[in-house]
Image (cartoon, rainbow, N blue to C red):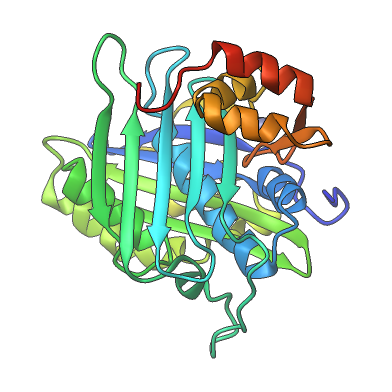
Length: 304
Ligand SMILES: [Zn+2]
């Protein structure tokens, strides 16, 4: 449940900024409410919630590069941790949805008192980004996980797969089912960025590591102004972020049809209705035996 009395009163949103006369791009986001909603939907353990908060934040910043309306980006983390794979889909209008294979998996805290996100996600595996493009095949970028903590994994993805030197910090502060703050920052050097700017950013890097604690009682604007003092910070835009699934009974019907005739007939032979749960919002879509048998008439026979 979202605890408005406990969280900082700034809506979940994404800020786009530049520093040093457009030599670098800075994105910052707050995803506190999104993360709480996702944790509630998936009845997530605390470690799963932390992982979701970080992944939602990284994805929101990644998705800010969607230029075409109606297009989407899918980020999938498939590691060898107890949580299994996690997927976030985002659209150009700031809508995100998240699915996690084992959201209830739990892990003890690490020796430093932090949630063991690396253990939940896994330290080996892949981060896959699929970008929907207008009038072209989707662009697929893949990089190897480096730590499973997600911040470094996304930095690796941007640097290796998209050839943009990037600094990423992600954070989620939550306890016993309550999310207090979640968010992230992404800084990218743009072409022609002077080495002095990069050195200055490296000096300030330790600030960013505590982003979830900082976001707990400060606005993003306040933080950015403090962190980039003397670096000619310019705010370009702010955009709201929401957790919203776009599933529907009709989409589920199409997915069922694609299973083929045999499978549909088998499902239709059961006495009870068949319930199909959406992996993202967990809502159930019911199909009666009659409906399934009817669909089977229109479905292709597998292997034909
Ligand atoms: Zn859904």
